[in-house]
Length: 223
Image (cartoon, rainbow, N blue to C red; front, side):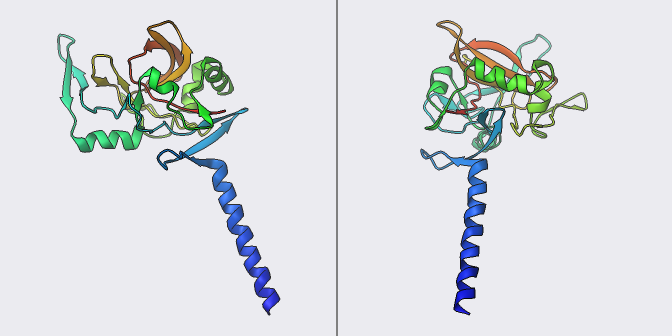
């Protein structure tokens, strides 16, 4: 009877260890603040499956300490509003933080780094190229509609891209829910760095560049 109990206990311990091992394959913990992130292997690269949400100096939640653009008047001038603290926090909870480029370069946790252009291109190539890769990389919810047509994707690879919007150099924010822009570690020149973006009404992934002072989302890739 004692031997049967020992075998049962050992089986339970083994099962628990197996479950924990499986969980570790899909998640990791940022030791700096204890936040847990999903991760996903796509091709030979392992990516964060969520936007980075580490509160580094040089990062902000969408709408933090500034106005957000909610539309444009008949003259094309922006219509803005100030978000409540609860609204700002809700944006952070859903889309995570936005970073300027210098901060983005060093914001990833130990063992991870900001992907360069080559690493982004490998991701896009795996998702059948830039013209339809956006649809396959975007999350299945969280994107705004375009005249009734859903901007959501199929999330075929588990990348779960979400549209965190943009923080401009003038301090304002715009396009949350409509555009996701992620920094690349590749520099264009002393003022600009490359980025990769997806839009609610586009199926592609587009490479561009922005002022280093802009605030964009960050995805980290494992070293």
